Length: 284
Image 1 (cartoon, rainbow, N blue to C red):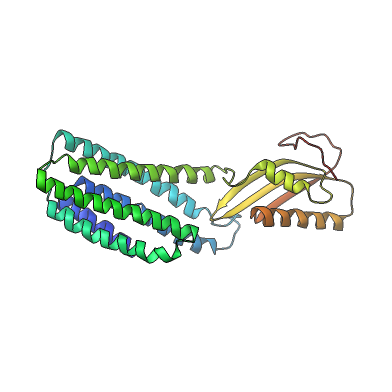
Image 2 (image 1 turned 180 degrees about the horizontal axis):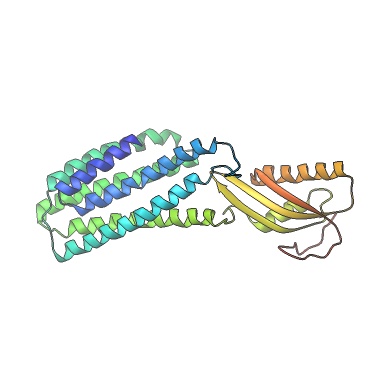
């Protein structure tokens, strides 16, 4: 993260002194990496904090809230830089190609080094996503270098704002994706990899459960998911109820990675009054 921040500062200076919106947009592009790294660190640190009387679910959503805020900031910043790029089409500004080339070469060395360092871990999904992102950063550095060379050879000043718009669109696209995902979690959205029907049908396979309804699944952030449901069961002793509850919680944890399950048991045969009801009857 320190290397990325240093790269952002260098590209901002290069963009200002070289009068290049392409470099400034690429600085914003690299700045979008900082929240991802910082949020991962923040989520790990805050997730270790226990729940208290104020935050009864703990602090898992701190990183999600930070992701939403940072993504919103990046969207606004990329729109502003996009506007500046369009203004450059109307009123071209002479860029300093040497600043563009040397700053981008330094950025390419950093991004290329990170990419090569991650190649060995490409089998890991998280590392692979970082690898692809850094490879994209390296390609944008190459594009700026090629653009600076083309400007020096042809004098075509429109190349710089064109590159700025292209990189800005890339930042906008990635930031909107983060906004969409983080707002989905903040609005208690269902985890993307789960289906309410699949979870309810799995709970129906637990011995003693005759009906499942009022099913709610949501994410607490940082890979922690929660589930609440109503289960209808026949009359049974309290110790049997406790065994059935543990079986439901184990089913949710093993098959769906849900680590917080709340179950309300109801006597079978009562009319359904609310929530989601499974369409097919139980088959034992």
